[in-house]
Image (cartoon, rainbow, N blue to C red; front, side):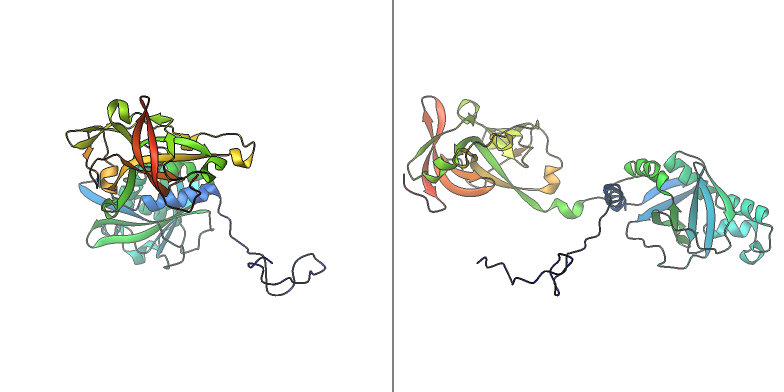
Amino acid sequence: MNSCLLEQRPQTTAGTPSGCIQPLQLATIPRATLTWRNRLAACSWPLSIALDDDTYRLQLLPDFVLGDWPPAVVLRISIDHHPCWLLCSDFPLSVRWQSYCQAAELAELPNELRTMVCEAALAPMLEMVERVLGVSVHVVEWAEQQAPILEPIEIGFVLQASASNRFTGALVCEENLRPLLMQALERWPMAPLERWDGLRAQVLCEVGDTRLTVAEMAQLGLGDVLLLQHCRYLQDRSVAVRITPHLAPRARFSAGKWIIESLRPETTLMEQNTPLVDTDELAVPLTFSIGELAIPFGELRRLQPGYAFELERGLDRLVTIHSHGQRIGVGELIKIDGRAGVRIVELSRSMPDG
């Protein structure tokens, strides 16, 4: 019996197992929403804009949740003729508000005049939004503390003009504004990634690759010789620096160092598909690396032709054999009638000696 089978439960009339075992209900997130959240999270770096002899610092809040704080000001605005809501934790740009009227006086003004005062007081902020989005923005009305209709898009932010002029806000808008907002986020300065720069990625220096069938792999043993199908090492002392399955820049050994020559993607046997005829005939890709290197992510982001590095061990004829990223053995690099080959000297798993 399968050891993973806990017990067999009787079926109910509905055809589902009775008892406490229930189907797992997972929330589904539309791809557009997922892309939006990821982009918003990447735009947490503040944006500075100079307006009216002052510099405003606007920072988005990726983890903002509507309802975390009661808004002191609720405005209905229009962005490119689309209705939106602007919620503020305090009177935004309070110094400008005071130059027009006091907060207590604002409630006594007629609605049309109050809207004009709001638009005049918020002129720098509205101009900032227009500059970021590239469309017209204006105040429609003061909403008199009425809660807005919940819409699909909520963007929290902090706007600061000086140490004493800072407030938290939220823009709530409808779904059809998402493409316009996404374009604005694509121009937003990305958050710096210094925290990852010191993290090291292990990369392999591959001298070549080949394929064996499953049946041939089962018979592989010590002393067997493999002919490499792809290898330029004997001709020009170059290797493929395998960073990802689709990124392996060429590097050439010169003056005791490896020098990156090209960043063009390189197709290997790992990426080629072979039709399955028989399980024993299924091709197993093998790669052969002459060494490995730990490169910090900060350097990987700046990798360019001419970059030089040293291997952790000296250059020799021993190569490490990998299959699907797993180390399976060690071999000796040899030459066979002018072509590169590998004689197996160590296997990492039990195999017939063949």
